[in-house]
Image 1: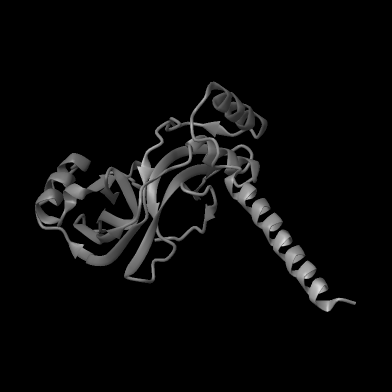
Image 2 (image 1 turned 180 degrees about the vertical axis):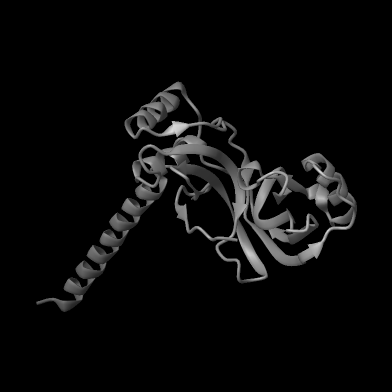
Length: 241
């Protein structure tokens, strides 16, 4: 037997196998990222999926397809259970609290109110934003204690570096993935679909944030969330900040 020839055949076969497996992986990863544009067919297909799974959509479906990038950040804890300066009158609403916060909380103008996680006016949640997108993990919480005093916790992300721009996948692609994989239970209600930046850990001060489609849904009395990588269509692990 010509072992040299046999060895060459084995190497070529191995390379062809790798190419085949690589191509299959590529197709799998891109199944949910090929639909880069919204069409009438997309909407019809999505409505059909929602109907079949008895899933209610109670929010607008974003149609924008911006270019986003990876972000490198440094996490800074500005406050932990710190008392908010300024008097609070009885029956004060969120607008009054925000006026006080704007004078006392560092970089308050960079934070965006999140109504889904808040219980006005006793518990208010905000996320720091960049370029109009929330930085999940850079959370500001303002709350009333049992004595009616205002306190707050604040995380801030300092942006250190960023990667190259790349167009994100559509919200349709992200929604289709989570519905087809059964990640949203039958009978659930989708409350929010929003582009955000998301990190894989809350343990490190230096993190890389990935663009994601954040999908919030309610099932009976439980509100849950999913993160779909807006670059690849893959699922990101859920971290509780």
